View (spheres, rainbow, N blue to C red):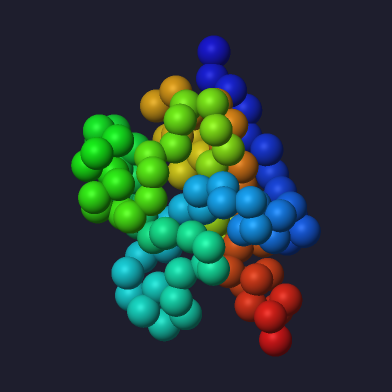
Length: 115
């Protein structure tokens, strides 16, 4: 059975930014070029996610500069508006990660918050 996705808001996102949880921004490179990655996060475009989360821990860390998350550690996914991050959560569940969190508001909500 797959685990389930927990939707989180901006308050919970900020807690995760502060506690070192892995945050994966799944937007495309051209979007990241315009806005930057969600603070505290790394960018893995949605299309690369399955391959990325299937890497060995060594490969993951050398590619992304962060430790590969354990199957039972929290991972937060974010995109522009919450649609792609929800897809990312499902991909992670299929790979056996069972504590996946979807930042529903995405970049659009983050941007409002920081203005």
